[in-house]
Image (cartoon, rainbow, N blue to C red; front, top):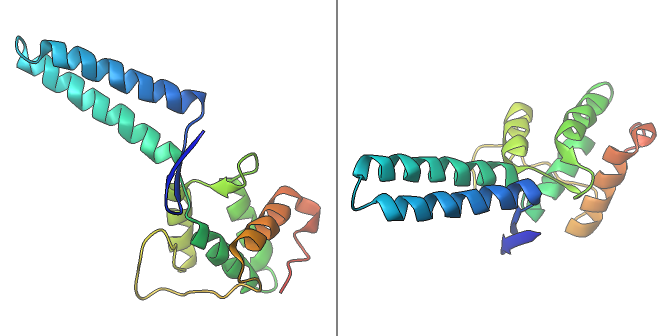
Length: 156
């Protein structure tokens, strides 16, 4: 299940839905204890915040604009660095969903010194992909990252 606002998406699988349900249960128990035991209620609220933060971390996927940056970052490398970049991107790519977790892409984009396009930023390299259409760029990335035998033929 996807929950999204504009081009940002939050993915819920069974574990994510379990985290959400546990968060609501913990908050309900905290509400019951708020008058009697403030310390217990406070600890339960902190626990609910940790559960919710865990789901936000594991469920927030990259924005659509980031796919163009990913493709451009792979295409701008030539020679021996291109397979290295593909391997690094393959480690964070979720082939079932055809996307990557935002936190993982943020770390990888910083190591490559490219804009991550999760929010506006200045002073970073903005690679230009061969394909300006977001959907086509995503399909090209998915093909490159799910079929290892085709990594040597990255379209330019």
